[in-house]
Image 1 (cartoon, one colour):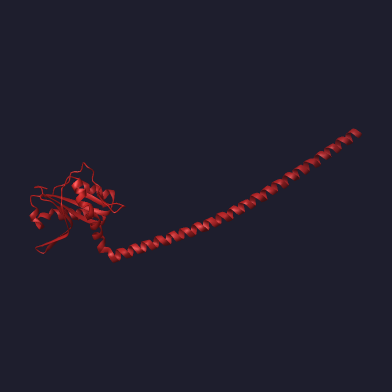
Image 2: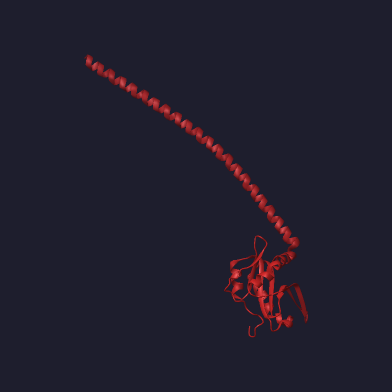
Length: 221
């Protein structure tokens, strides 16, 4: 009987030990949950602050972009007719050297050359020449395929307006502050030099060394 009572007491003691251990684990788990909850709440608040700061910065960036766009539109509106002349000036500073390096020994440069003939007018942005070669360049702020086609039609009439250059080798070139690849390829295939202005404000010829320009002064061209 005494042995059974001892066994029962041991069992009860074990049960109470298990309850206490379980209670301790619950309390530990509850403490960790609270710590995790506090951590998550703190992280949430920090993230929320970061999102608000990021949103504020994005709004400021958007405002500045809109302001820049507005100023560009204003500049284009006020000086739109002058952009072409700006490109001409940037290109003109290097053209003689660039073409001399390509073996076209032009020595003289003329800009805004205009001829009127039978009620029609032809105006050239840049004209480079030596004793037997001429390079005619059309400058645009943003060169487009339509600009290339217009220039080609102009070059077809070049000798009609400038007969003094008969017998010369006559080359054409198009220049732009921005020249997209498809436009450059199109002009290249038409036999035109393609020039652009780099970030340092220096002009360069995009055509590779294997390029052979069209001679608009040749018979049958």
